[in-house]
Amino acid sequence: MWQDSQWTSKSKNTMSLNEKRPKRKEAAMRRVIWVSVLCALGLLWSQACAPDATKEPTSEQQQETITKEKNKEAPRRERASEPLIESSFDAGEMQRETSTPEEHLTEKHTNLPEEPAQREDIFVEEPSESAVEPPPERPREQMPEHTPRPVCDLYCNNVMTNCTGKHAVFASRTDCLDACRAMPTGTPKDSLVNSAYCRAYHASTPAQMNPASHCPHAAITSNVKVCGQRCESYCDQVMANCTGANAQFSDRKACETWCVGRIDGAWDATQGDSIACRAYYASFPAVRDPAKHCPAAGPAGGGVCVDTRQVACKAYCDNVMANCSSVGKIYSHRIQCEYACRGMPIGNAGDTKGNSIYCRAYHAGAPAKTNPALHCPHASISSNGDVCGTRCEAYCEQVMTNCTGTDQQHQDKAACMAWCKTKPSGAWTDKAADTIACRAYHASFAAASDPKSHCPHAGKSGDNICVSP
Image (tube, rainbow, N blue to C red):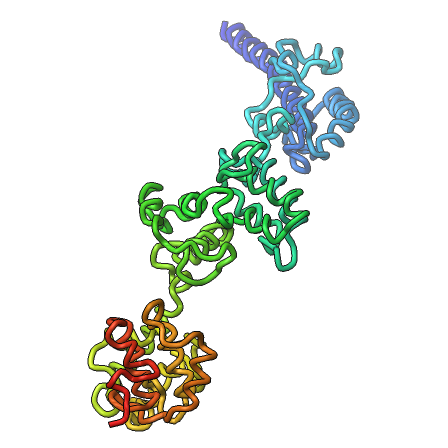
């Protein structure tokens, strides 16, 4: 009995082992197949493809299967080593196999086992052309809506062809195109309104026939108000190109209100207190560097579109009132200096000689601060010692500037200079003597404020003031 039970137990154990062996064998072969597939996918390269990858002994049949699989998968491994363009598997091929190990061998693995979890990371398909978004296109420079590009091309073609040399309106085509941005388009028939077409017309055949007359009409501010009023073209430019932190006016109405009554100036002005000067800086210069040029285009003029005489007179009167107010005193009040300055030629900054405001400003500056007794007379109206011009030059500038119309004392400047040479110069401080210095004094700020009273004193007779005692 015991032997029977022992035999039965052994028999069960043997049967259990026999049942497990095919399963182990099947599991081993599945591992072999997995290794082959993974080798084809390029995941285990050296380690997985090694003979001991399964770490279990294989039968001759398994070894032969591995060899066949390696031979079969070699081309796939070669392809796997190249950059992958697109996956060659479809959904059907990725289904898990349900056949037995023997079926795998006979079917020569026409179906692949379930793909590993990592496959999604291995096979990365390159996007198609349609899936790739093109880089954003760089925005092209747009003309304002009211100025289409064609009219600016027409305008600039004409003006750069027919307005050249001394009649040139722009130095380059780029300057022209940038200035054209703010010009209203108008219509092709325009010849007397503020528009790009009006300017294009005058820059075409009319400018070919008479550039001296028609090229100024084609300018930004259009000379003689042919293509619009100066304030129209100025406000077009400054409102279009000076915006945000560089804005000069709150709105167009404010621009037009300020502009009315201002000096128009020459159509090609680039300095001086005029609308034409401001319109110039509000056009293509402001397009390129608004922070730099919009101040010149504004009401204050930015130190550029200002009265150069005003700037020079300020420098002169600042110095003379600071340094020549006691020794060598010239004026009792600043307003006298400012009136007298109106009859002096401006000259150039840095002048030390010659009849000019800047020469007098120089001598009334640091030199007068050091030695007022010497240099303040040089800075006076008639400039002692003929340093800042001769007495006659100073006198004739003043009397011809401030004594005009019914108060005029000489026919012209040449006649004044000729008569002046016959009279004594006198002291620079003379106010009641038959001298040129006395007459120059009365012809300056005195005549500027009251010409009826003081112009006769400044004339040939002296009117009982500038006469011999």
